[in-house]
Image (cartoon, rainbow, N blue to C red; front, side, top):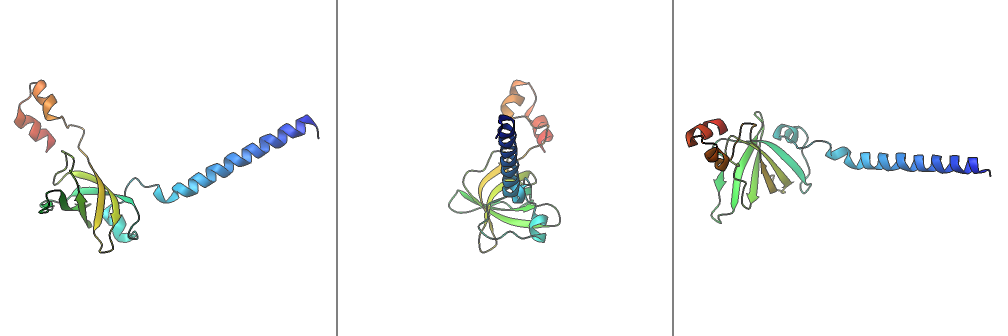
Length: 148
C-alpha cells in the first residue's frame, strides 16, 4: 500500500472515530437537554422515582414549613398551573424565600414528594447584597423595595 493511501485510511478512521464519539455523547445527553423541569412538565411527563433531576419554578406563597428537627423544610414549587411538593434537609441559601425563584436538585421519593439535595435560589438583576447597599450609602428600606 502506498503512503498516500495509508494517510487517507488513517484520516478516514480518525474521522469515523470522531463522529462515533460525537454521536455517543449526544445520545448520552439527549435526556438531560433541559436545564430543569417545571411542575407543569412533570405533570405532563412524570419522572420515575429515584431519577436525579432539577426542578425549577417559584416558591409558592405561605408554603414554607420548617420541621421540628430545625434543618428540614417543606415547601411547594409552582409555575402557575401546576405545583410540586419539595422536602429539603439542610441550610437553605439566604435568598431562599416565598414568591422567589428556585431550582432544586434531587429525586422523587416513592410517595411522590420531591426530595432535594441542593437548593439554588434565584434573584432578579436588581439584587444588591445588604453589605454593598450599606457601603453604597443606600437606605435599608430602599434596598428591600428593590429586592421585592
